[in-house]
Length: 133
Image 1 (tube, rainbow, N blue to C red):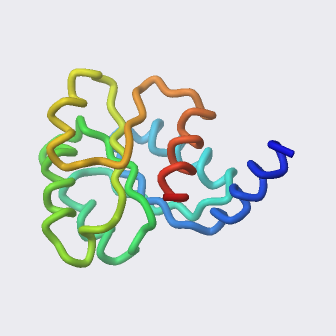
Image 2: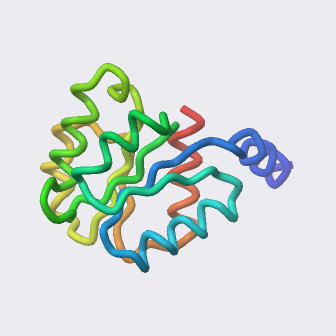
Protein backbone atom coordinates (compact mmCIF):
# COMPACT_ATOMS: atom_id res chain seq x y z
CA UNK A 1 0.00 0.00 0.00
CA UNK A 2 2.88 2.41 0.61
CA UNK A 3 3.78 2.48 -3.09
CA UNK A 4 0.15 3.29 -3.93
CA UNK A 5 0.03 6.16 -1.42
CA UNK A 6 3.31 7.56 -2.74
CA UNK A 7 2.18 7.38 -6.36
CA UNK A 8 -1.21 8.92 -5.50
CA UNK A 9 0.39 11.88 -3.73
CA UNK A 10 2.81 12.36 -6.64
CA UNK A 11 -0.11 12.28 -9.09
CA UNK A 12 -1.75 15.08 -7.07
CA UNK A 13 1.38 17.20 -7.64
CA UNK A 14 1.42 16.77 -11.43
CA UNK A 15 1.07 20.10 -13.17
CA UNK A 16 2.35 22.09 -10.21
CA UNK A 17 4.69 24.87 -11.32
CA UNK A 18 8.33 25.09 -10.20
CA UNK A 19 10.61 28.04 -10.94
CA UNK A 20 14.22 26.89 -11.23
CA UNK A 21 16.74 29.70 -10.68
CA UNK A 22 20.19 28.41 -11.62
CA UNK A 23 23.01 30.19 -13.47
CA UNK A 24 24.81 27.07 -14.71
CA UNK A 25 23.05 26.04 -17.91
CA UNK A 26 23.86 22.31 -17.60
CA UNK A 27 22.47 22.13 -14.06
CA UNK A 28 19.44 24.22 -15.03
CA UNK A 29 18.74 21.86 -17.94
CA UNK A 30 19.20 18.74 -15.78
CA UNK A 31 16.84 20.13 -13.13
CA UNK A 32 14.29 21.06 -15.78
CA UNK A 33 14.41 17.61 -17.35
CA UNK A 34 14.15 15.82 -14.00
CA UNK A 35 11.23 17.93 -12.78
CA UNK A 36 9.41 17.78 -16.13
CA UNK A 37 9.77 13.99 -16.22
CA UNK A 38 8.20 13.90 -12.74
CA UNK A 39 5.17 15.81 -14.07
CA UNK A 40 5.94 19.36 -12.95
CA UNK A 41 5.61 22.43 -15.14
CA UNK A 42 8.98 24.17 -15.05
CA UNK A 43 9.86 27.83 -15.47
CA UNK A 44 13.49 28.93 -15.45
CA UNK A 45 15.59 31.98 -14.69
CA UNK A 46 19.35 32.08 -15.18
CA UNK A 47 20.21 34.90 -12.77
CA UNK A 48 19.09 36.65 -9.64
CA UNK A 49 18.06 39.82 -11.42
CA UNK A 50 15.41 38.13 -13.59
CA UNK A 51 14.16 35.64 -10.96
CA UNK A 52 11.74 37.94 -9.05
CA UNK A 53 10.03 39.02 -12.26
CA UNK A 54 9.81 35.39 -13.42
CA UNK A 55 8.13 34.55 -10.10
CA UNK A 56 5.67 37.44 -10.42
CA UNK A 57 4.75 36.55 -14.00
CA UNK A 58 4.75 32.76 -13.61
CA UNK A 59 3.29 32.47 -10.10
CA UNK A 60 5.07 29.18 -9.36
CA UNK A 61 4.03 26.86 -6.55
CA UNK A 62 7.69 26.59 -5.49
CA UNK A 63 11.02 28.30 -6.24
CA UNK A 64 14.13 26.13 -6.45
CA UNK A 65 16.81 28.77 -5.89
CA UNK A 66 20.57 28.46 -6.28
CA UNK A 67 22.38 30.43 -3.59
CA UNK A 68 25.57 31.03 -5.56
CA UNK A 69 24.20 33.22 -8.31
CA UNK A 70 26.29 35.99 -9.88
CA UNK A 71 25.08 39.52 -9.16
CA UNK A 72 22.03 39.19 -6.95
CA UNK A 73 22.77 36.00 -5.00
CA UNK A 74 20.10 33.60 -3.79
CA UNK A 75 19.78 35.36 -0.43
CA UNK A 76 19.02 38.69 -2.14
CA UNK A 77 16.52 37.03 -4.44
CA UNK A 78 14.80 35.30 -1.51
CA UNK A 79 14.55 38.59 0.38
CA UNK A 80 13.03 40.29 -2.67
CA UNK A 81 10.53 37.45 -3.08
CA UNK A 82 9.59 37.62 0.61
CA UNK A 83 9.11 41.40 0.51
CA UNK A 84 6.71 41.37 -2.45
CA UNK A 85 3.07 40.57 -1.59
CA UNK A 86 2.66 38.73 -4.91
CA UNK A 87 5.50 36.30 -4.14
CA UNK A 88 5.86 36.35 -0.35
CA UNK A 89 4.04 33.05 0.23
CA UNK A 90 5.80 31.02 -2.44
CA UNK A 91 7.93 28.31 -0.77
CA UNK A 92 11.66 28.55 -1.49
CA UNK A 93 13.97 25.54 -1.60
CA UNK A 94 17.62 26.54 -1.69
CA UNK A 95 20.05 24.69 -3.93
CA UNK A 96 23.69 25.01 -2.90
CA UNK A 97 27.06 23.33 -3.12
CA UNK A 98 28.23 24.87 0.15
CA UNK A 99 26.69 23.48 3.33
CA UNK A 100 28.00 26.56 5.18
CA UNK A 101 25.41 28.61 3.28
CA UNK A 102 22.59 26.98 5.19
CA UNK A 103 22.98 28.99 8.40
CA UNK A 104 22.77 32.29 6.55
CA UNK A 105 19.86 30.98 4.48
CA UNK A 106 17.78 30.41 7.62
CA UNK A 107 17.19 34.17 7.79
CA UNK A 108 14.67 33.98 4.94
CA UNK A 109 12.94 30.87 6.32
CA UNK A 110 13.29 28.51 3.36
CA UNK A 111 10.99 25.51 3.05
CA UNK A 112 13.96 23.23 2.38
CA UNK A 113 17.44 22.67 0.99
CA UNK A 114 19.06 20.51 -1.64
CA UNK A 115 22.83 20.13 -1.46
CA UNK A 116 24.81 19.79 -4.71
CA UNK A 117 25.70 17.32 -5.94
CA UNK A 118 22.18 16.05 -5.37
CA UNK A 119 20.55 12.69 -6.06
CA UNK A 120 17.51 12.91 -8.31
CA UNK A 121 15.41 11.02 -5.77
CA UNK A 122 16.39 13.45 -3.03
CA UNK A 123 15.50 16.46 -5.18
CA UNK A 124 12.08 15.04 -6.06
CA UNK A 125 11.43 14.06 -2.46
CA UNK A 126 12.14 17.58 -1.17
CA UNK A 127 10.05 19.23 -3.90
CA UNK A 128 7.16 16.82 -3.31
CA UNK A 129 7.29 17.26 0.47
CA UNK A 130 7.26 21.05 0.25
CA UNK A 131 4.42 21.12 -2.25
CA UNK A 132 2.30 18.81 -0.09
CA UNK A 133 2.57 21.13 2.92
